[in-house]
Length: 162
Length: 263
Image 1 (cartoon, chains in turn purple, brown):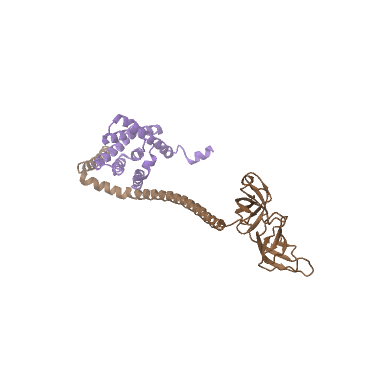
Image 2: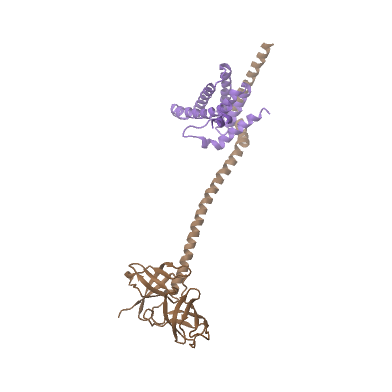
């Protein structure tokens, strides 16, 4: 039963990769949903399941990519999850801003590493046009997620406004 | 005890992480053998169902677009067919009037009906020929079936016709077979009648009624209609003769104004 949420996350990643990827991309900024889900799991779960989930998520998210990079992608995602868990535990992150900062840094790091692995020309330009832009865009989605998850905005509160 | 617990906890983390690293290493080192298996499984189990859904959505969107395009084509085709049918009908009509000849001493000015006025029956019509085409008031108007009426007013490009069905209109008429005369006029509830026809005059159902040429407006010999019924009341002086008009006043389209040829 404990595995069901993780399976759902993986299905969500596949759904995004197949159907939503093109729709959610705005100019050069594309949504890095796998990394976001891994970071969210790392923030709310223990490090061991989060690391395993990161590894599997890396395999699922990049299953359609170059085969020689599959192992690396799994490892990078696992390291991302482990790192996020360690930062969360050691800095005792509770505030929304701290979580968002962690997510933003994690996303930039992941995007940059993926960019390095792709060995594309014009690395610095790509960092700003793709990696940072995509990370900021994904962080906006993370903000919405955290706001709902932390119950900063609830249906009752919205009703109370009106 | 606490130390043991911490050691086990730390050991578990390390084991897990080492296991992940080993798996990743295996995928990296044995890439050609392992990665197709892993990626193939993931793609088959997770990606393929969504891919099918996406294909269905794209197909459905394509079907919707194609449906809209076909609907448009159908509307255009229907409109074109309707126009062709109308052209065919016009062709039949025009063919029937092609060999139509004017009475001696007159020339035909072909005209098209622009509008028709009248509540119960049409009593007047406007045609697209006027004084510029030589159409002047008083000229008789006919079609390929028979007498229609006369021009009552004429402007540069249009003219107004008083139809036979106008109750105030009178035409001096003659029965073709017996040569006896009467006056044709229209009564709202009885239709076209031949008035002032003597009760002893020779007239029967099916006889043709023509213009007599008396009165000066209409030339002699224009077909007005056919006798539909004849009544001879004993106490009256004249017959009651009803006529079926030769021209159908509900379908007037192409008309001819009769213009007298100048010597």
